[in-house]
Structures are given as C-alpha cells and as structure tokens.
Image 1 (cartoon, rainbow, N blue to C red):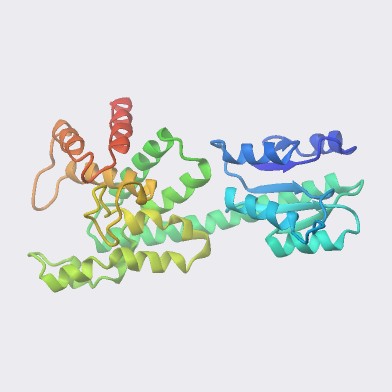
Image 2: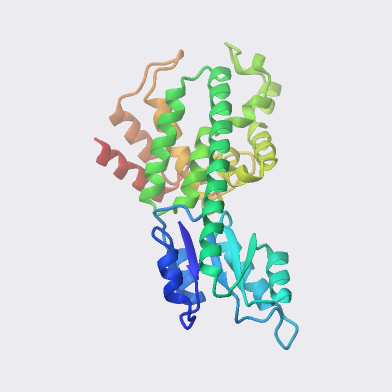
Length: 317
C-alpha cells in the first residue's frame, strides 16, 4: 500500500485520485497522514507521498520544515520510501527533501499524476525484489540453523506462525509483523558463531562452554546489523532470552524494556519446546504446559503476553 498526501485545494486532486488507484490511500492533510501511519495497517506501507509544494525549504527563522516533516514520516514508517511533491522549479525544497531522506522528488505540474503513478509502480516492483531476496536469505539461514541445532524445520515454522498470531492479537502492525517473522525464523542465528562441538555435546556443558553459548544473542545482533534490510528483525534473536523480572541475558532487561516481539516469542518458544519430544524427556501434555506458562507470568514472562497467548490457544483448539 502507498499512502499519498495531496493538499485538498489542489486543482489536480481529482485527477490524482483517479490515477492513484486502490489499494493506495489518499489523505488531505499532514495530520491525516500521520494518523493513517499510526493506525494498525492490514497491508505493508511501501511508500509515502508527501506534498510539500506549498512548503518553503526554510522558514523565516531559518528552520527547515520540509526536513522536519520528512523526519517525522521516516520515524512513523521507517521502511517506506518517501516521495516528495515539490512546486515546479523549486530546486531548494527538492534538495532539502532529498537531503532529509526522500527517495525521490516529483515536480507538481499538470503531468505529475501520471509521473507519480509510474514511479510508485517502480517502487512497488523494487520492494517485491527486496522482499524476495530477504525471504531467500532468511530461508537459507533457517535451514542451516535447523541442521546445526538438530531441530526439525517444522519447529521453526510452528513457533513463527504462533508468534505472528499472538502479535496480531496484540495489535502489532503489518510492517512490524514482517520483521517479527524474520526474527522468529532466525531466533538462534547467533548459534552459527558457536562451535559445533559445544552445540552437539551429549553431556553437560562446562562453565566456559556455557559462557560461549550465552554470547549467541550478541552474535545475532552483529550479524543482522550488517544487513540493512534485516536490522529491524534484531529484537527476537537479541532479546528472547531476557526475562520479565530482569534475570535473563544478555542485557538483564526488565519488564517493558524487553521488546514486545521478544516477549511474545519467549512464551511461544517455551510452549513449543515443552510440547515436543526431546532426547532427554518426553513431551508434556498441553494442559501441563498451559499451567507452566501461566505460572511463569510475572517472572519469566510478560503477564499481558501470557494472557494473549492463552487466548490464541483457545481459538486454535
């Protein structure tokens, strides 16, 4: 989806509404634009079009309102391309917009609706190519993780699917769900940096070996930070071992300091692990796991997440 802001007084407004077809959305004020960005979205926001054709590059006090507007949009929709509509010949405002992070500028002349429509089609195509590349990279990493951790890939699919269900129940936006999916699939990515001799060791680990294992969230953070389009997927791999009471690792985060995605995944991961057979124990009954999860609310787990998780389980039964 593309959100397009056009001044309601624009004489080309009706033409633009005809050219910018659904599922794109038109708004008529900056306030409406921000409200739309802050609302839960059913579709990913691919681009935001901001009409700055009546906004000077700088006001009389030397401030940069165009830069400020784009900074707000980048914060509200960090993954969306921003296109600025500028007045014909206004090179100063165009430069201000590009310097502030706009992907493109389009002059708002009589032909701009067709120009804008073509540009948005190109941006959508580029986004699909990026998404396909990220999906392929994530799938390859996830398969390698399953082999190294001696886990079946259906475990990854189950915890990812259930994490997304709980996240949707808690009102997380479609943009964030995309990265929660990547983070859930790659939750143990940092274990690629842990020697296989430790991961596959049949007996108890030594203190030194445990210290190496406990570094895997930091390794995950470093690996994902190096891939710009995956940096927003860090929360689960980096923080799903944190605990609500602050006794987790690697940073000892407490309560809502822990990213919500990681709080959700922590519950789902324990659920799926205990409901599955392991070489060292048989699976628990679903009723026993429910009681175990409920008992950990307020210590290991966020009580609100536990409530949402149990409601999702009730819906799936």
